[in-house]
Length: 102
Image (tube, rainbow, N blue to C red):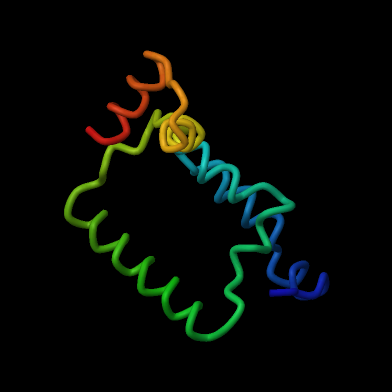
């Protein structure tokens, strides 16, 4: 979704995204908060916005029960893609993957 610069300034979007990035605990979370990617957080249509709100509500409910240990997770996506394509992954990647699914 394209959002006007004026709207972003009114929302203080850069400040909000920087604060959000400071709280991100995973590489993927931090990358979603990069300035060039941050406007991708806006939904393209009302149905997508509702789906995102439902995901947020679900995440909040999970956090109220018990906070999952997200701190210190490594980015395992590239290693998983390499393995999916039949490539080799090293011991360090395997340890990171094990920590992520534990």
